[in-house]
Image (cartoon, rainbow, N blue to C red; front, side, top):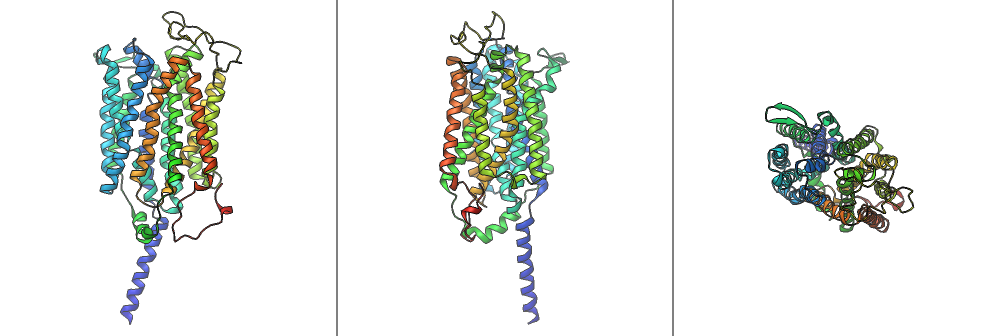
Length: 484
C-alpha cells in the first residue's frame, strides 16, 4: 500500500512538473539570442537600400533603374526559394540550429562578394552585384525559423512576448538598417585607403560591417544558443489529438497582408533615394544621408516601442487585430500624402546635363508636368510609418499568425509566411522601378494604395475569423470577450 501510494505521489509530481514546464518553461536566453539574430538578418536587406543605387551608378554610370530593380529583386528571390526549404528542413530534423548556421554561411559569402565589387570590370558589376545579393537572400531565408522557434518553445502566456523579441528584432533591423549608413558617411564616395589596393568607402563598408555581424551571429549560434522545446513536447502529449487544423481563411489573410506590407515597404525603399533626388533636387550623397537620417529617427521610435511592448506588457493595450488594421492604414497615408497630386503648387526641377539632381527630362517625358512633394511631408511620414506603423504591425501580425497556427511545429507555415514577404520584396523592385521609369512616381504610389485597400477590405470582411486557434478541449468563449 505504501509503495503504491509513493508511486501515485511520484506520478503526481511528474505531472505537476510537466504542467509547470508548460506554463513557465520558456527558454528566455535562447529567445533573446533569436531576437538578436533576427535583427542581424533583417538589417542585411535594408542596410544597403540607400547606398546600393548610387554605388551601382558610380561603378557603372550606364546602369539604369531597371538593373537596380533586378538586383534588389534577386535578394528576395533567393529568400523566397530558401524560406520554405529551411522551414521544411527544420521540421524534418526537428531543430533550427543547423539551418540557421547554413543561412549565416550563405550571408557571409554574399556580403564578402559585394565588398569586392570594385575589383570587377564595369561591364560585370551589375551581374556580380546580382549574384552577391542573391546569395545573401538565400541565407536570410532562415529568418522564418526564428519566429517558429519563438512560437514553439515558449509557453502560452509568454508567447506574445517571445514573438515580440523576434518580431521586434526584425522590425528594428528593417528600420534601422539604412541608418547604419550614417556611420560610414565620413568615409565619402572615394573612400580611405587601408591597404595599397583596398579602400573603404561609404558604399562598400556596409558589406564589411554586415560580414562582421554574420560572423558574430554564427559564433553565437554555435557557442551560446541552446535549443529547448520542453513546452512544446509537454503540450503535444496533452493536446495533440485535440488540436484542429488552422483556419485557412485566417492563414491566407495573414499571408496576403504580409505580402502587401513587404511589397509597399520594398517599393518605398527601392525608390527612396531616386525619389529624393527627383523631388528635392538632392545629389547622390545628400539623398543617402537624408534617407538614412529619416530611418535612424524611425529606428529610435521603433526601439522605444519595442522595449515598451516587452517590458510594460503592452499587449493588453494593443489588440492584435485592430493594431494590424490601423498600421495598414498608416501605410496608406504614406503614399496618399506623398503622391504628386496635380493641385500641389510647384513642379519638380529639371536636371541639368551631367547632374543627378532633379528630373531627367531627356529620359522621362513625364517630368514637365510632375508636381513636387515637400520633404517636410515625406521624411516625417517615413519616420511615422516605419517607426510606429511597421513596428506595431510586425509584432501584432506575426503574433496573431502564430496563434492562428496553434501550438504545433511551425517551420513550414512560418516559411510560407516569410515566402509571401519575399515575393513582395522580389516583385516590388521590378514592378515599381518599371512603373516609375515609364509613368513617374504616381504609378507605383497608386499601386501601393490599391494593394493596401484590398488588405483593409479583407480584414473588415473576415474580422471574426482572425482569432487564435481554439483546441477542442478549450471551452467556447463569448464573442463579447474576444479581442477587438
